Image (tube, rainbow over all chains, first blue to last red):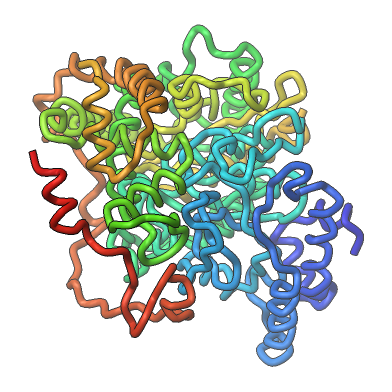
Length: 494
Length: 104
């Protein structure tokens, strides 16, 4: 299979061809590695991929082919090469969170999401670059250097799941996993012109996802179209006893719902879409505003009712997030101390020195900054003023969503980001960088599902539109996203 | 509430991070530059926040804490920095002399 044909295949199409015996899993894996080499996915070019093992992937492909010979079916993702963010535990490949402190670490167990994808025939071909411990919005905070955007290599991929976004955009894999804490799947998806999903909190098991902020973290799929993203979400979603926050709410068949409406002239008939004013500030990029208005017109032509709504506490989301997330991170990252796994500094004469030297040498500047910030807002004398207050405001942000979705609004539509991908090195102020999550972070704080999909281009760069829905209403979210994607067609990439 | 050099030294100690003097000035400036944006929260009326609805209760029901140890595909020694006879090896704790040095 030539690389151009491979790079154009969706996950659903590729698995169908493998299932029909038209394509061998081994050929799909070889095509993925060839495409990675051709596109420059390595450290000397786009720096999207940190770790890969061609022989291991080929052995997995051969094992799948043998299994198909016996069972006859390879699963819903038979032979589909996938890329995985480097903070999701995989057997056989390192899991370093793009941090020196986990250099060389290979997990002794595998994440539930990866296990479920493998059970459906997916083959892990790469671990992808990311902001260290998922702390960042550009994939510039990696200990292994910045990832580069396939649409313009002088620009960032977004982050923190930038390597996964870039790998999908560059045609290296049709599907990837990223993780979200404040927009780390949707924002790079928007910057790289692909689809990214943040499921409802509790929808996808966090088992095997290296913890950053446990009340916010979720694994999410990244794909080149909504159908593939919905399929991957269906597969990885669902109850997992290994994650105490995993939900027992039944997982529906998202694809059946929207595919059954695919030929309808009004697939969004009966759906009400809210447009929250706080996500369209006066200083919003003019191209992004224009493309959002085009998408809103498309919703109307698809039969949806569009209404203006308000989520009044939205402007407080970034301050809340940058208290809650660092606070949880300061606790979660206490485990990296040079004793049980990962990097250990040399020359320490006492245990206390070992901790301090290992952590100071192992963590990069942004992680250090957030650990200190989180420790500060949790420390005696400041806890009430910062952390407790932030949690209270977080409840108000969540209530905004409950109120809007309680008023017969089925979904919300907003831009995903306030700007397209910015040049590497252009944003140096930490708080200015934090603001690039301004439209995505609310969904994490409230726990609702959200998706970003391409809605057009601004000065040649991809722009994403975001659809949010109520808790566990992924079916509605995908229905709206699929209809919009179909209505925009090729315009979504123009 | 401005963060001082002593505040950063204190939280660095709590977080087991060694911060050099030259890095300290930058960190104080950076943390103050971030925290100034958090002051807006103090103006928000949160008196009824506790009544605000959190994630639906049925989504994460309580369950018995019954799971046993999880199976590891690799032995611990395969990734531990230093191990002997099933124990992690670490440097000694601070000696009595070290403790005396640190005493006020």
